[in-house]
Length: 193
Picture (cartoon, rainbow, N blue to C red):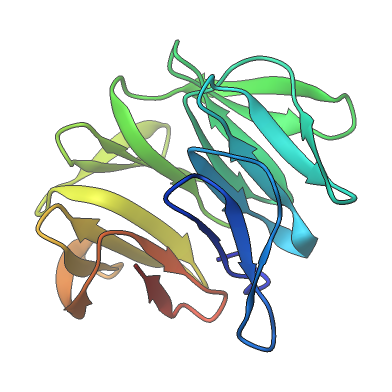
């Protein structure tokens, strides 16, 4: 789900689909392991070889380098490399700009509106970069993480339980329903698969 509330999904074969206003799905081509959506129709995918692709004028165009994970925020794409470098795609220079190192063994990550990275490591621990250091947010073993709206954070565990982060005390609180993946729309409402 993009910050503009555009909804995308991947088929089991890795094909990209977009939910139209009439409730129908339309294909966007390509074959990816994951896709991320940004503002104003920004759409990026990462394929099986680690190549990041950007959807421009109906065509998937490759960006240089290889990545293991991608996220969208602030009108562009962010990447984590095999060397644990967090980089942002600089639209003006058409190059990746390394921002920082992330903890090793990152399973998933998101970037919030303030350009703050949030990660899940392979043990399911959620961490956020705050005041120059990585802060642990224990209490759950997450497999999916989403940030949206105004500081709205949701996570899903391997038991398919949904949790939201209470920002007052930075504690995870259970939400209703179950899911294997989670996204958050611009109004802070979760979208679950």
